[in-house]
Length: 205
Length: 205
Image (cartoon, rainbow over all chains, first blue to last red; front, side):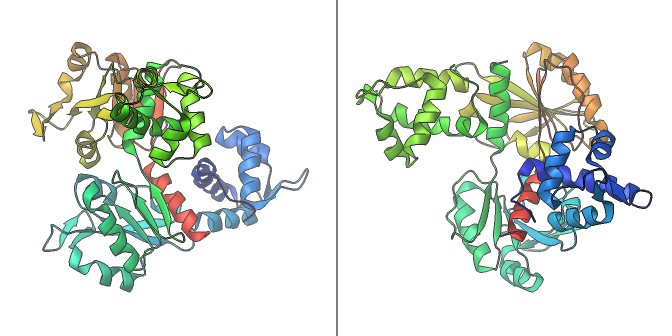
């Protein structure tokens, strides 16, 4: 990969991939101009996005379509799907467990766990299991991603348990700053802040 | 307000406000250095954040504490709490209805609506009402913020209904691009993308 990719860029990559796959048989090469018109995106943005994934297209020729597809797939990690688990099967945890659209980014949520649950339950085609099965499940299934949707007071304990179970990346919805070693990838979600920002824009428009 | 404030800055403002309120009686003036030490934030960041809210402190004196408090409150809109409603009382809608922490940013979610519901229900101390009551409720209660947590296919219809009901700012969780007039504030939430970005960081660390 050429450079570290920004979140906004990453969000557009599935659109490029979908489009390129739809035309790969007819167009062995494709220009940024053609892509930008087809997807109604600015040409400068398309060039910038694609150069982050694969370098520049050739002048007058553009990109090799199949090469660009495989670079997009590699960046998105489509070829190696990572599995994630949720701890905290309250409303938010259950909502995420069935939230659609994760697969196109190369990952799937495979199960949820909750300390309040004694017997396995199902939500759609996904299972919710007691916390006592957590570590074994993660190790057996090589789980590397954990999502925390427990109340604030329980979040650090759950985080520690995740790290002991081989998890290397954590998406935390609890409104508390988690302490993790440097090699762990941590992403703090703050839904209140997203709404606050909308409110701020409303008050200042 | 001096300038348009960034989302990350806005996220720190409640911490400044909470701290300043805790010391306002003892410290009529306060320096950025003191604030940065108390909150364990970088001094450059504190100066930048506060200058976006209130301009610079006086050399050797710092900020007038009470003035800074009132400017923070004004920016956060704490004095004029906006009410928001949710349309779509599935798992995600119900999770947001009871998500804590919105109040400190000057807003509250007052009710949810759902086209599948015929009789009023309660989730905690909040009500879920049938969609037939939506417009009247919004107009009567001067609702300006709407949150969409319906499936993709229903999102534009709900959005249109919100605009007809006086709503001016929309937070959309449905994975679809909504069409709104220019004067409407629109924020698209993409939870799949947040998880995808974590996955990307995991694959590239």
